[in-house]
Image (cartoon, rainbow, N blue to C red; front, side, top):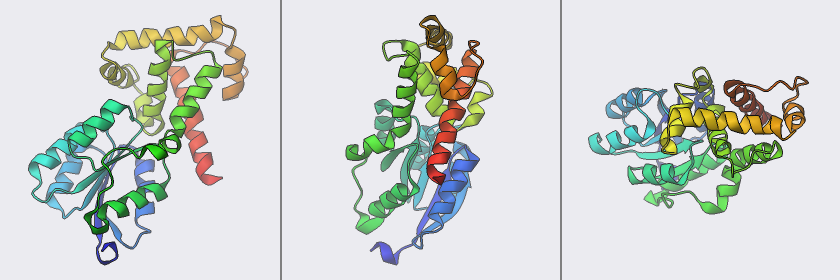
Length: 260
């Protein structure tokens, strides 16, 4: 039974704040012990291979080697394979499917409540009865709160799903909310990742996002944008400025929700 066991966990996420938040929540549970943390896939694999680990909590997007690589390596190299829970803002069906195929026991979309993660951990280890290794779709509406909010805001600007830039912008914001370092070099970080996801090129991603932003001003919705982010200047932003400003808008919204 779960009450008789101690679950040894490694937490892997490139965002220091998010990683520490998860660790602090886990360490409050008497049945859970965090035995290591890492910010990239290579570091995480080294921990798993050299420590006694029951569970790995990891993001898909990691520097050096990503989360899917880590899942594959764990499956290939670990004699006593730990269970793995993927937590990520990259929650498209193809990513979820691939994560499950290479060994994930469960997938949670960021943002989520720490209580939900702990609940899933205890379910997975309770008498070895795993939850279904996909999203629990009755909870998807709650898990996709960030995606829904981004969609609503972009729609209010006049950027709808019929515009390809809509999908690229939403994806960029979801990626950057929990990994703000991606904003430092958007053209070298975010654009290539989006291009890979949508099977296109970085230059096409850049043009589509620029076109979407231009639509806001061309259709007379710049005042809605300015009111939403709380500025008076109606000068059209660059792609980087637009994504960075909205990322901070949604990131602060998440923080305020947690502290309310």
